[in-house]
Amino acid sequence: MSGRVMVVVGGGAAGFFSAIACAAAAPRDKVILLESGRQFLTKVRISGGGRCNVTHSCFEPRALSERYPRGGRALIAPFHRFQPRDTIEWFAARGVPLKTEADGRMFPVTNSSETIVDCLLQEARKAGVQLRTNCGVAKADPREGGGFALTLSDGSDLACDRLCIAAGGCRTTAMGRWIEALGHTIEPPVPSLFTFHIETAWLRELPGLSVDRAEVSVPGSKLRECGPLLVTHWGLSGPAVLRLSAWGARALHEIDYRFPLRVNWLPDRNVESVMNEFQARRASQPGKTVLNSPLDSLPSRLWEALARESGVLPDMRWTTLPRNCALALAERLVRTELPVTRKSLNKDEFVTCGGVRLREVDFKTMESRVQQGLFFTGEVLDIDGITGGFNFQAAWTTGWIAGNSMAEA
Image (cartoon, rainbow, N blue to C red; front, side, top):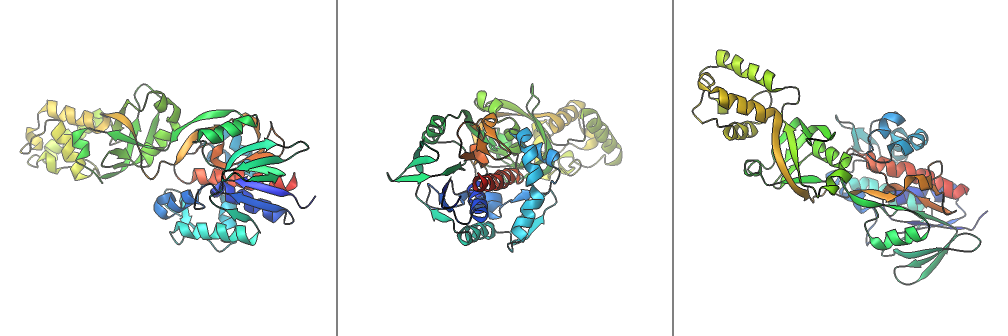
């Protein structure tokens, strides 16, 4: 069959990959990519601080799937078809090599997200994709005999034979309504990958301070993550916090983002081992002041703040450190409790959990099990990953499968 009209809704990573794959596989069909905003690939531009965290160097599908708080099981089979290694090869074949950083995150060697944006735009144009901005979809109705009649945001109409929804998280009720009108169920969207607002005075005095490795947990729950931690003007951020927020997205939403956060600044130690270290310092550094003697590799400003909060005075030396102060400091080092009062908005918060219910989609093709000719890809599905390039990889994978399936359908 030729001469069909394929419409992809959403000009982000998943939308572009879907449109490019479809146009390349079915060159005689017309592929139209609609973006409701003024600019394509907005999230790609700002990802990774403007560097674009394209993917992650995890190449085993099952291990890769474990980085997704929601949707991981559904992604195992798709990752066998298109995974990070395929993403690397896809971009390299188009003149965009990627590099791997120590933590496994992968970026373009240019360290610029514009490299990825330019590549996707160029490939879409080369494949003949019609690109339209400021053009959203207000309504989609199935046509008798197949295909869809779309009502666009400017009031115009557009008929298509295949429809792929790649419009990101279902944040707008209007989008959710017309997806539900097509017979689908929307799992309520809530934020994922957010930071914690903490008003504790001594912490607020340490903005910009980072710890290479700390453990954060929520007492009374299974939520626990270990990794780099960053103190901000509003509270805590960094990979450990972002991962914890992803795994706890729904649970933390249900308690209105008010909960105690426990931080172990020395995740390889407990109170007993810290007290033993203090005792050793009494013997080896008796005349040295405690405030000037950070434990392990703790930043000096953090050590001083924790020590002062534990009652350690400026003139206290290891040989004169009272046991009650030593015990209080040891407890704070491995069990600091901080009251989180709300989630904080920042540049990293553009991921939601929630979206189209996964069992209503065939992950072999990304086609709806409810409505023939309808496809879903990317964050519009109830899929989200932890920070580190995993959300983009889900977009590339589901987009590639959806685009090829549309062409074959």
